[in-house]
Image 1 (cartoon, rainbow, N blue to C red):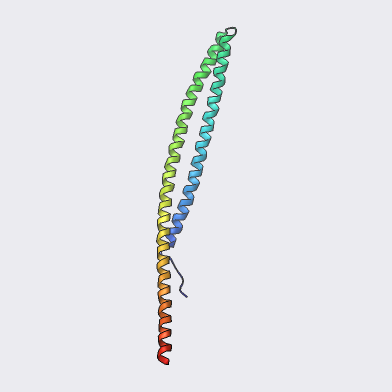
Image 2 (image 1 turned 45 degrees about the horizontal axis):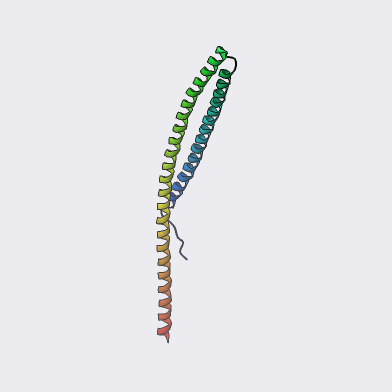
Amino acid sequence: MAVFRYKLQSILDIKQKLEEQEKIAFGLAAAKLEEEQEALQKLLIQKAGYDRQSRKLVEGTINLIEINACRKAIEIMKTRIRGQMLEVHKAERQLDQVRQRLNEVMIERKTYEKLREKEFEAFQQELLYEEKKEVDELVSYTYHQK
C-alpha cells in the first residue's frame, strides 16, 4: 500500500516551530505588560497615600517643612507615574507587535496545513481510483474467463 508523503512537511514543521516561538514571545510580552501595569498601580496607590497625608498635614497644626516635603514627594510620584505610564505604553506596543507576528505565523502555518490536507485528499482519491481500477480489471478478467 502506498504511503502519503507531504513534500512540504519540512516547511510545515518549521512554521509550527516558529509559531511556538512566537507564542512564547507573546507570553513574555504579556507578562511584561502585566508587570508594568502592577508597578503603575503601586505608584498610584503610593501617590494616593501621599495625597491623604498632605490633606492631614494641612488640617492640623501647620508644619511647613512636612507640608513641603509631602508636596515634593507628590511631585516626585507624579514624575515616576508619568515614566511608568510610558513603560506601560511601550509594553503595550511590544505586545501588539508580537501579536501581529504571531497572527502572521499562524496564518502561514494554516496555509501549509490546508495545502497538506488538499494534497492528502488528492492522494486518497488517487488510491480509490487505483483500487477501483484493480477491481474493474479483476471483474473483467473473471468475466472473460467464463
